[in-house]
Length: 258
Length: 203
Image 1: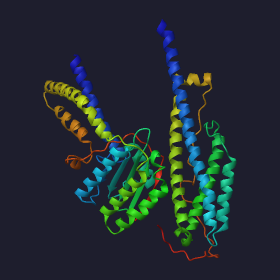
Image 2 (image 1 turned 60 degrees about the horizontal axis):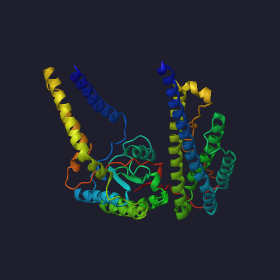
Image 3 (image 1 turned 45 degrees about the vertical axis):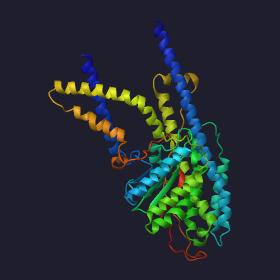
Image 4 (image 1 turned 90 degrees about the vertical axis):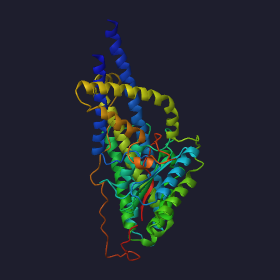
């Protein structure tokens, strides 16, 4: 029967995606793409401040198209060097617009007292290694040393903005804004397809005498639309989510400690 | 009947085009590698000048860097085309490796000169050098990945029949040199203490 064949295909595909994702996560120490622009996984700044920073960074992309990401963890997760980790993470997150490569990530590891600004190819001119080093050494590190993380981030983000502004022009929208705009059309189609799949899955499950698979559609698609990791913050009102534009880095930037 | 003739011809064209694209990618990545190595070489005169200004700086370390820089300049490879000869690449890599060793030795030795390290000029140079070393390792990895993709395509059917016909050649990789992944060991001459006693301050 063609329907059951299709259903089997769909189910196989869905489980492949699910298990594939699981395997990848287990094998790599690279954190998945962050949900927002300012990601405080270590909880060193207040929720209000985090939201404010996130909005600043999102607005900066709208105005200039530069994607500046901040990620704060408590512990450095990799056995390799900070430079290497930052490079590999950057290649997965891909901040910066495709072709312009105008992204940068500020990595912070609170317990290790280490940080790095990693720049995309396109920001190496506006944010040369020396400038990154200067921002880390003189703007961020002194504040972190006294435990004032919020001020350190505020000054760091500000200095990055100052250095980078004027290098590229924005379109008034983030990558995610643009994707969302297309969602109106694709969303409806996706909804129809999703319903169709659900229907088939339900039917298959029923014919097998159980609802085992029918629950699969729920969390899978739910997790998808919320963007994965830190769903706790992404549901907040007015939160601007981040989606990498496809930028690459050649290992530019500077590392520092405090 | 048509298909029998047409199909191999079409796949042949596709494979040929793919090989050309991959080969160009290898060449592009090679140019990137060359440019980051050049970037490092360009930093050295400035570095040498800054360090030489510091009182009593160990001359032998500086000479080593200058010499290594000179020998790097002699192993010039075409920057628009990735080398096909493994020995050629090996020579290039050896010269650059010597410079890497000399440079990191210089950075280690400089820890004995806190006054020098405190100067802005030196800090900037160190940041630039570190950034350049990082870029070198990134671009080398990118190059190796491009070579691997190209070499694999060369071996695969039906492309492997084309490489003899059109003279595609496999490309050598960068290899990790023994020792270059580790900071070199530095033996200090304790009979001649540096200008200022060296406190073990690390940034």
